[in-house]
Image 1 (cartoon, one colour):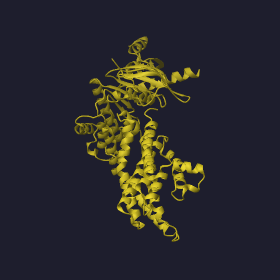
Image 2: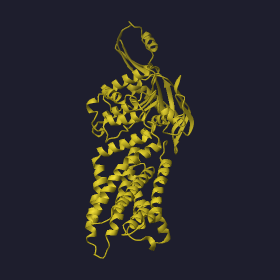
Image 3: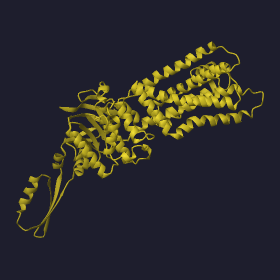
Image 4: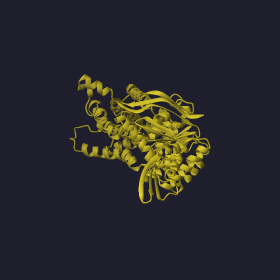
Length: 286
Length: 245
């Protein structure tokens, strides 16, 4: 079953088209990544799904509910972590989490707050005001506020920006654990290594979908540069990054006919996503 | 209703944690009233400065409550906490109710301290009934100012955008509501503008009840209008606070 269904969703800000006829389905229990450059429509799409933005046309269903008409029913079941920390600087980390937890009537709230603070390694600073926290620490508190009521879907807008690598990996392990328990994670990110951790990725540009695929299949869209030196003669070639192509290319030379060196350079996910975006730009300009 | 109390508690916790804000909203008016005392001592003896004291004290509370509340709510919007509250399950009415309830205590402290200082510093002698009524007027005006601040905040996307509302709302209150001069001599259109401002009705009530002899019935209409402002602004603020972009 799909946790999110988006059909022909569009949104304009004056003359700027923020979302352009977007359609996609997000299966339940998956980690779904939104990748794209700044201004590609990632935040706008998330805001439309959590019901804080009215689309111009098209519609979306989250857990089968309309984000605007069924907002009260939906808001009990979703967690939202915006791009900015969106916390009360004058309150402690604990009081910020308690505030959002109370809104959702979370049972055994105090213990849950202790648990989640311990997970994000902020127990020692739990009663300090958020004003004294670094950007990464604020992100962690913000994540706690989004998770405190055990939502069925979590919308995360660049959740690990400014978070240190150790905690970033911890957060992703938590996302994977949550997804295994049936929670759907809808996450926007700039960081391509994070895209690799998603079950499926949508690449956005100017509010349009450029590609929807698994990170593994997106990797196969990349190219591999080969430098083969045969009897001192250097030959360079570029092939599609599939294991079969690579094997065929090597067979062309014969594996035992004087090859003295082979150098491979395959596109990483960042190169591939960038090339998909650039290709579309080239198409539009030509 | 539960959500309203949760927000009110959070507002109180924030006020407690923000000493600068507390100082500005409680000690600030007291300092300004002291400056007023210094100014009034330079006036010639035939000027009845005592009749201006309480209306000006009420104006100071009105101005500070309005501007501080408007700025705080705009901050909620710019920091993203307003959007987060709404997505987190709080309704518009619980947000407005929570804010108003949260500021009830601040308005009470402001009204008591401003009134107390004014009476003490200017040597005013009023009977208990008058003091209680003066407190109610200033307190009611402070709550109306909070509601006005919430309403105005919906038109501002940044803190600085609140500032243009000072010449639009606050300065006309100084000149057109009877705070400094009686409004009878003003052109009719200026009198109409003055009557649209809540301070006009608070000043009317104060001017009646600081007289040596008065009947409470003389103030009922103005009290009613001031209370009407409270509910009117509550409705306007609920309508103008947007849940979606």
